[in-house]
Image 1 (spheres, one colour):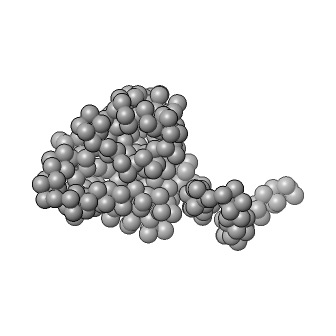
Image 2: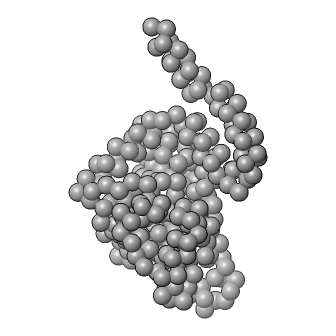
Image 3: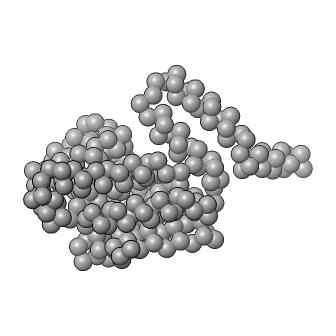
Length: 257
């Protein structure tokens, strides 16, 4: 594996930190980087010690989007090469959603185009106050096609269309206001504040978080009745986990005392 992606696992803390490592190209996504990122995510999800995965970018930016030299090269090879390149990124988005482990994007600097798509595809987005987000593909006659499935779920149809049709960048505060970002932290305190929340998430019941993530995405598009049935089934399953049994026993013991 090359150094396009750095992967540091802290098994004791339960956190895997994955870093996009092309700072000289603003961490632009090429085929090799995306494949390495998928490998790192799969390894983290298979590691029982890991409770949360954090994705960040080396250097000044999170990710500036697709490497346009890579895109141009694929275009020259024809539509099948372009499809392979696009499907690789689509598989990354699907992997993040299917993983049992929650994935957090830790965004500083710019998250643009495919980089904004990668951030949006994660389960949670934490941003430094000076971060910027946007989908400027329209300025190149391009379309942020795959991320639309996630974007419209995060911000609603009208806001999603505004973002993809005007291609304007928005700051972290506005991104949070429209639903792209979960939490914004002051830039000077960003790393420390992110570490605090990652530790808090890692301390939560791994089974409860995993089952909650699975149900949340499973009921997407389901009817109300089907969603309630799925919830009932998962409720019954969650009750049988070691974490739930221990949590209930501890609560009852405290109440008796």
